[in-house]
Length: 369
Image (cartoon, rainbow, N blue to C red; front, side, top):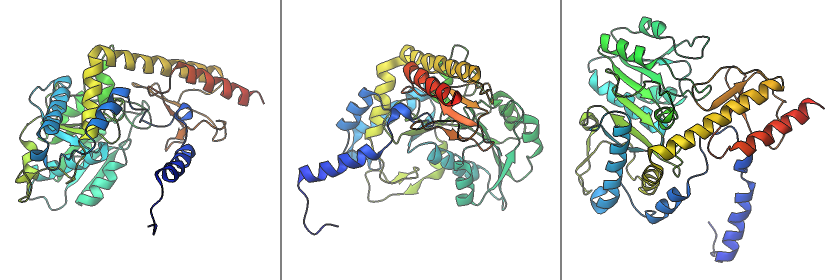
């Protein structure tokens, strides 16, 4: 720590220099986060000092969190869903497995069945909770194999997990089939829709993945991804509005005497930002955003295949993957690579049509050298 403080001008000159070292979103094709919507930023700034960890001090902000949960509950076909705003998919997935563990007591060696394509947060969660993670192979279509999932379930299985919008390939697992399997085995069924939860409902032909399917217990969704909220903001939804109470611990010195959340101090600002975007755009606005992202995804796939880079998968959502060499992408573009070494891109709202054309032009120049 500095012995003597800096002037405001010196401080913000330094901060501006550091900000310039960050990558420009114009060239980021690898992230499932995006530039926040202007109304999210404005709402965020209004609630900067609020703490949802002590909701009695901030009842207005707490009511916004409840409203956000209600918005998602309605979107996911359960008006009375329970839930709360998390820091993102990792926390939501961890809390879902904590919930599953409370519902199956007396099991000394619990396991959960997840697809091999599941987000790495499940490995973290299982390590923390002392749960065996059983990975289910994915098929040639890059989706979880439901029959194989059923074959891994035994008397020590406490939960089944499906993904609605895989991180690497943008695929939706056979959630309807998995929900039936969960019902047959009386299992807790968690759907990780951190990415797809803000895409699938707005497609022309939505893929069933939510509480409209009997058997779905919890859903994770991240407004700070396709919801264009400020970071961090996720949400965990429960079919049973009282389910989260099984995680309650005493908090005697706060304005509430019990809490089921993972974090203590929780920012209200990104919650306000997430709600602001949903209410500003509405269903029609979100459909337009998603339609644009899907159109750009289709254009990117068509353009890359014309250049000789075949798609690795035909995605359900706005994630495009290709067969390409690691040195195929010129600077300053930033892509990522899947575990199967496929070039991976995500057509988020900041990756508009002009950026797709610029990327394809640079790829063509590289190809012809």
